[in-house]
Image (cartoon, rainbow, N blue to C red; front, side, top):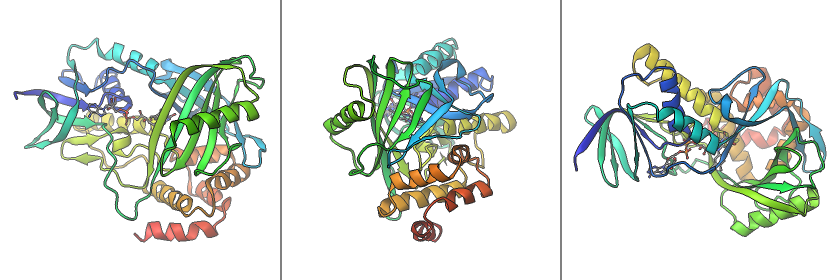
Length: 385
Ligand SMILES: Cc1cc2nc3c(=O)[nH]c(=O)nc-3n(C[C@H](O)[C@H](O)[C@H](O)COP(=O)(O)OP(=O)(O)OC[C@H]3O[C@@H](n4cnc5c(N)ncnc54)[C@H](O)[C@@H]3O)c2cc1C
């Protein structure tokens, strides 16, 4: 096999890989570099939606493709109480992956310096002072490889590995009676026999709603189990029996305290495989964008992509690992933890914590809202391992 050479290779042209190329070209960080994007898929389907929150006035690099924004967040407790959350100036934003792929790919395709290859990647590694990737058909080498292909890591015995798994449907109906300006951030009006379980409900307008059945647990359910819970929720909670399904999504996001490697030689991991998924929530989109900002800043300042300080701090990693261990103990259950948290702490403080931007007084407020006795053992386990 003949080896083809590039300056930069992107292994996995999904959210992280495409964001990096788009932003590097847009910010003119990569000007003359020859770039190769390798993916096994052509990214022409709406295979997921990305949601995240940002303070009013703060924009992200993909603001043009934000499909919907909500200012009002609701929380429904395990006792069916409704809380209107005090989220300060936070806005919840949603990007449909198909809009992202179209927008980003249309921009990138204008640049002759970027090639695309649709092949299955078999291995990625370092070869001398270069990085190399082998696909089903070719071998490519470059100065740097940015890898976003997720593989379940080899865990150590002390690691927790939960899966956030969910089935979402977008429905069309005339029976949705509440205000579409309000999104249901977490709705615990469902049974908890399979782990921490809630609905996540995003009305796009009075007639179109996205409803997602979400679990934090260690194994997936059978497909029909997600469907039957969604049907019950629609009928008994939202009082919707007459609807048409327009779109469906299924996802499984790792929630783990495994320490992902950011870099091995000239291979830099980005996205979920680089540790950009927040272990306590599964949110990844904005963390990945923050990591990409660090990579681009490093290129601008040092002419290389390496950076020291991760945006998910060690403090937040310890707290996330503690939460996963508390969930694993199954005494203080997830639905009760979130109910205590949202009842006792302002949501804007919780959102800042989940963004990794909370201060120590914020962290203390969050800890004080929870039943401390269930956290002491897991916390000690995490800090002494
Ligand atoms: C359905 C769903 C909904 C989600 N919703 C949210 C959300 O609301 N907010 C949020 O913050 N996060 C969300 N996430 C989590 C996370 O943001 C996404 O998984 C995100 O796409 C991760 O980006 P990534 O670049 O790491 O991986 P991906 O976007 O999955 O990109 C990896 C790419 O690698 C390619 N690939 C994989 N294996 C190979 C191979 N062997 N050879 C060649 N190519 C390969 C894939 O085709 C893919 O294009 C969601 C995840 C899913 C699955």
